[in-house]
Image 1 (cartoon, rainbow over the protein chains, first blue to last red):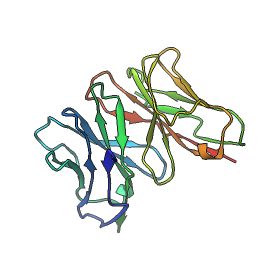
Image 2: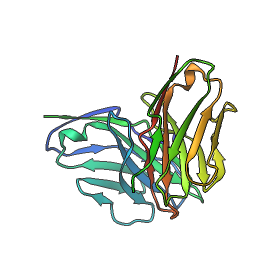
Image 3: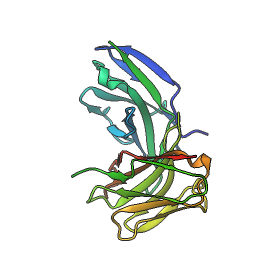
Length: 115
Length: 114
């Protein structure tokens, strides 16, 4: 079974609108971490936001927020007030395990912001 | 803090040749990861170092692949007898000592095997 599932291969959003990128995960561990990364066409993976499995509040970082629904095993990324520079691939990732050394990535969602 | 750096950024080689990539992590990070990313996919874990010790290796890492981190600082990834299927982006990431620390990635090395 896939550890991380991103079901939206491509998404479009109008500039200044909000967009939600979906991510579901699969783990039997109680302690894990969820991450979102942005990968522009240049190729570098840029860390956006982190949510720990024991965190009670949803994580927020500027225009990024993570909608964490533990019972549903979902960790959706919400980008508010989209900008043209947000056009990129977005990857959801999970860290699990006692040592937390393995990270699993989804297949990504390509976001295009339309002017 | 200059971030994670990788060299070279691009490498074109002929099938059967050996190639070596270098990764310099963030200086205070003791953990280092190598990933491979092919077109349309997310990064796939290859191997992990804590200081100089290689603690985990993926089944993706065939015997043609070898990684080292001799002094617990920079790391090298060597691919021997390259095959066309090795063409991919090779990403390095480093991570601090805390369990909750995230990974920070370098810009990657894009390998093309002709």
